[in-house]
Length: 238
Image 1 (spheres, rainbow, N blue to C red):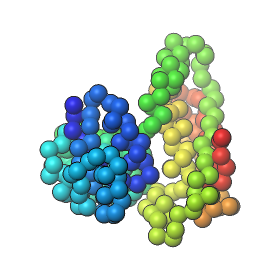
Image 2: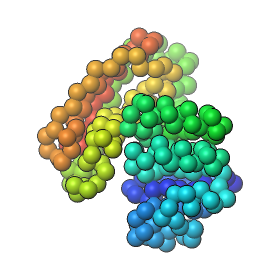
Image 3: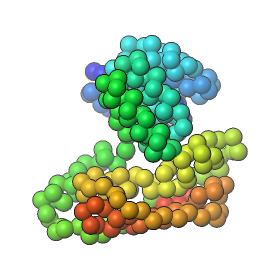
């Protein structure tokens, strides 16, 4: 069993900890969050006794890797510290708010010879692996168009307060696109085994507290396929 430390005890942490409970490959042995009340609540719920408000104290634990679930803008500094400590990193999407920051994280991990991965939940779905196998077997023929919508009304029903990092485009790196549509775009990239070369995108504000609440992007992939990706905090898929 690999020993993992988890940083960030916010909304995505139950998904991580439930996956750890079910996995025969890793366990979360220590957690970290500067919010001590949230840290205590999550630790108690999942029976994790080793709890740290400070990230460097988490790195001092006997760990094989760290899972970074915190705000987008803290990933870079955490990867720098983790790489210096020889800890492999699995980062919750997106890797960073900007391309420059992401490239710097990749560089630091390479210099330190540690693995750096991005956690995209859709890649763990067995159905998507079946679809990828069908694409590779030419079951569909040559893909020319991918369309996807990513939406939920969580923040329409329960808007975050003004201090929440999700309200700050600089900390997020954007809005609905980087938080929602990125799932579908990354899935399409993986299914097609291709990369995006040209992108047109726009966003609008409408019914929620977010400046970039609803977004639409058209993507041309290197192999010639087109992608059409919509995302919104003011709509729901269910």
